[in-house]
Length: 360
Image (cartoon, rainbow, N blue to C red):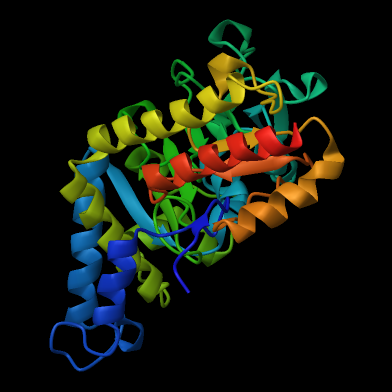
């Protein structure tokens, strides 16, 4: 069977050259006679993989020396707790921007540890846009400001980085990290689950400014203390070694493409192609305000929900899979992360146009 175009929001498709290399190295990584998954995480072989992966990620993102790059477990959902545990530092409140399903989850977890001030809230509008900078009601007593630059479920993306003055800005970049260049110095903490643009599920990246490390809430578990992981080089316990290895291959792949500047050009082109097809149609609709549309996650609806299952069935037959929208939103969703080739987006557009011709 030939490979399909997988539009899953995560775990997402991986670049085919990475899968081929991993296949070729599965039984014998560089003459060791071992698979990477069998290696000691403290052995020189895996340590070389880990060191090189971190160096490549730092290069891709331009991470300043004053930041720690941590390779963790637990997904972004664990970071919802780690952030307040590590960043409150004696304060009793934090600002959160409520712009979609994932920011809501972060807010719910944050309320376990502090007073959450909603500095922006678009839920009453159906999470259809990102709030403007002028709408942000930031609090003087907040220890930090948390937001989700790209809401995977709603397909809402901030077209700017919020200005939080002297307050550390925390960003859940699970579905947007590595899709384009960013200025890491604008953030106190960046975290991301790997299963979108970084690698397979099981690995979580956290990029943390050093001055924010070292003071935790009383009772913080050892495994949820950034300082512990920073001091041990992300090796306090056995890390997700194979996922770390695959992420390192993805970092090399991105560098070979020309880095994040080149990746951004490709991603913008893919998004423009798909949104252009939706906007040119009377059959498909995207609910997000144009200025807040995500490059990575494109939800769209058909005029009659009764057609949804037909669309999905015929799309699958055409080699286009995992297009069903999240159960909380409905409709369709095409996630077009870094590994989705332009040919995949073109194939989806061609299918959508033919489906509209025959069903519209």
